[in-house]
Length: 471
Image 1 (cartoon, rainbow, N blue to C red):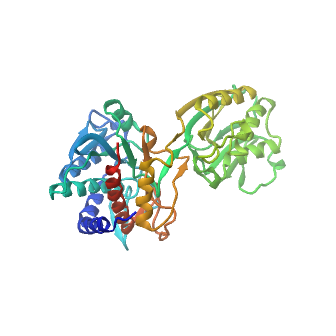
Image 2 (cartoon, one colour):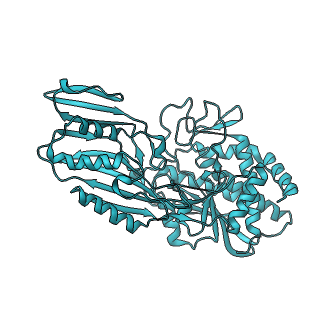
């Protein structure tokens, strides 16, 4: 597939407009657009920061030649009308996670250093959002120059609630018809064609009156494997052996504090983690520190935590498209005599949410525990041989001179909230970064300017290809 002439034209456009792109990324990075529901109000349902980012995004879209409107602080809808009202859409988000600690500079001030941009959102997802607007601007300029109107309407969507709840898309989907096809520049190159189903569960023990474990706590969320875990247990300190990774501390009055250090991480990739909750569970069982009334709950915990593939709960599954099911224990706490464990499960297409729910309830019944299951999403995928998938992949491989293949993942993006959508770039696990450049959600979040430039060229070429398909 040859794009030599178009490719050079697009690269020239990107080089010419690049100083303005950097300024616009900087404008958005300067806004602390973290969700703040305590200050939510009409026109700012996710708080003042996301609302301010949408206002800037709307003004930016209008300046770049799009018909844009900020829909009540939920989402910006920006159109370049085509000959048909059918839409090809690009969806990015302007909300971010908190700046956090460890930055060498201000996370909400764009820093330009040695060919890299640093700042919260440069990669996730304010930088890609600006690229999507400038991709549309390219076609608006071509139309002004007499190249004709696009065959389909190009719609750019700027969300404001991707990091915390997808309330922006719930609002959008109630009000607007879905596009014929959508991609979100909020994943990894080259192309994600499927996302596992996502389920959460809360497992609660009966009230335990005579337990030895006075307290047990770790983590704050179901979808994150914690870095540390702590339990306080009634026992004789002198009889406890030392174990690597667990601190044993005398709390006095016959109480011992056990503190475990594991390797935390995201629920979608547990293979890179070591759950400290499981470390403590195994220690309590091996040292016979549990009362009879506690043993059923902690036997369940061991079955859950000894393997992250769900085999201990008889929910392990795999198929030809997705990696095997993953099941992790996230946050745990004890309240009013009851232990409460949060679960996160990413499941392939070989099991449905209803089947998974039945199996989890059966596991809970086996151990005398109450289980509440929430199926957030079923598995979602598009067949790899679909024309639009092949078009996107060919554009990427042609431009980069690679032969990479589509993939599926356990994470979730905007794509799964639409009937026909994928994530398409912009992160790339194959890139080697300087040590002072951080990843998304970390200190010194950064991305190379050349990578952004290349990504914008790919997005423009991809939109052009999508416009040539028969929708």
